[in-house]
Amino acid sequence: MQLDSTSIVVAAKDHPAATVGEETVILATCAGKYYGVNTVGARIWQIVQVPTSVADIRDAIVTEYEVDPQRCEMDVISLVNEMLQVRLVEVQSAEGAL
Image 1: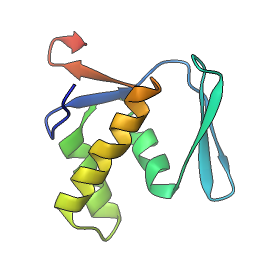
Image 2 (image 1 turned 120 degrees about the vertical axis):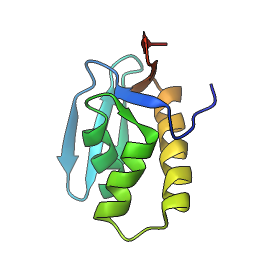
Image 3 (image 1 turned 135 degrees about the vertical axis):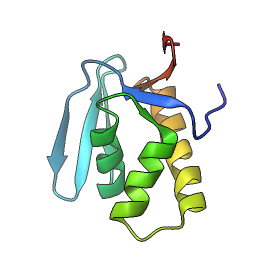
Image 4 (image 1 turned 60 degrees about the vertical axis):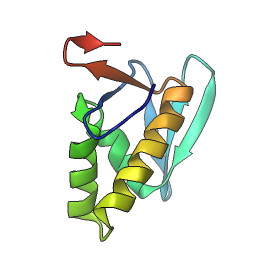
């Protein structure tokens, strides 16, 4: 699946997360593994608790952190792709989950 700025991303159900020091750890229950994300990754995890477009995630991060919008979008897509691979997030179409 090719992600772009219009892709709608949402956290998959039943993946608990906790903050440990400067990092947030997310349990991928389907794999039985923990994944750590930094402060920005943790913020993205918070944002995708509800269905959100990649563009809206990018805009939130650009507003909160000093980062180039184009670079930010590439980084958001990269992180979301990693999260997709381990089924932490899902991508939805306008009609519902894919």
